[in-house]
Image 1 (cartoon, rainbow, N blue to C red):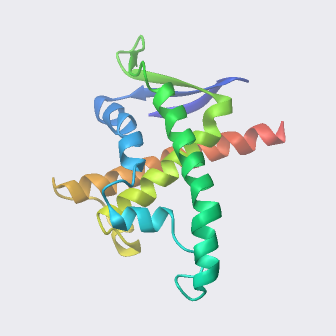
Image 2 (image 1 turned 90 degrees about the vertical axis):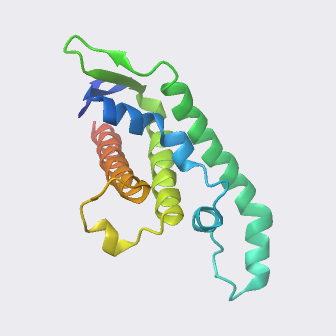
Length: 165
């Protein structure tokens, strides 16, 4: 897969194989913490972890609803961008064109997916240092986390590159 700036308004993911197409299509569902208490706790963690119950309660009342709204907005942007995905390129690989203004949403959505997957499958720092082996769901989740991290990093680089111009 290649990620590059096409023009001032567009970033392209090029030469995407079928496996990566599937992983990209899974971003919204992977980012959804619903059904996993561990993922909910990781994404919407309390700032003091119970040390200051009053501050944690205020956080829950005032900050978490806004966080949920922002995260949901990011995921909806990604869903919209991948609605017609994949499209064929001349080389029979797949491509995805993303509006440059959507990169921030993608960065947040990819990060949320990584956090939710790590919490849902109990993936820790030690696991992150290993290559995902095996054919089980946990190995696939670890692979997704790595792929999403690479895409996220490239999108951040694209954003930073535009700041220099």
